Length: 281
Image 1 (cartoon, rainbow, N blue to C red):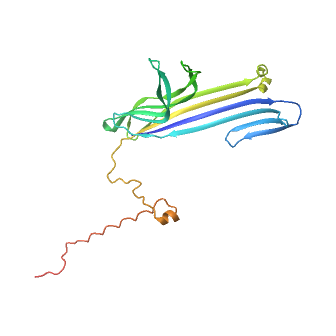
Image 2 (cartoon, rainbow, N blue to C red):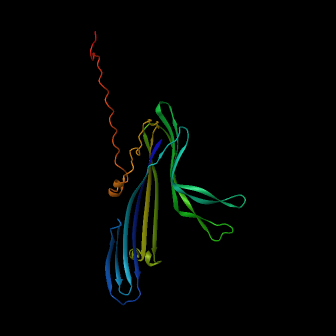
């Protein structure tokens, strides 16, 4: 039996600086306001000037930092020499062209998966071959076109992080697999063709977005030898009883009270080797 802990630590950093202006006419009066938002856990702020007729001139700056930790703790059992697997995710259909010109759909799995093959050796050792895998749908895709189909279809890409190793452990020992790191950096710059390229004043005529995502995976695997349970093993539901009408309607209890403890067995009479009763001669 394997106990697996899969930790995904994701750190995101977002920096944004942009200006915006909407001018219609020169009438009306200007009013400034300072905007900030701390409820969502992000630092964002901006200085906005508004006119009564709908004109606006704004400067916005935003910075976001996030740290997310997602844990999955599956427990999978397999016989010695047989493969066991675990998957928490989903499936997508990918069209595949055949030789006869037809197109069939093929299933592709994605998510958090694990495949392992245990082998019990002498001395209580466990030879373990483990292949954990984490995959998800990418934001990018591949465009395809086919006869009889108008337009271009976008097929999603699946990004996969996989590791495979073979170790020998004793019952209750653990080992860790780490270092599966993924970095994504996206930078977008928008601005006016000429004014946005000026050395200093160009920052007033363009907007810049910078986003960096860093994700690291950690697998902790613990191997156990499964032993049979004793014949008198007590289940958690053995002591559950049906509630009475008073307990259900008046007390709002979903279960009855604990059953009375069994009466102790009567003690055996004391025995003695001394003579009892009358002795007849």
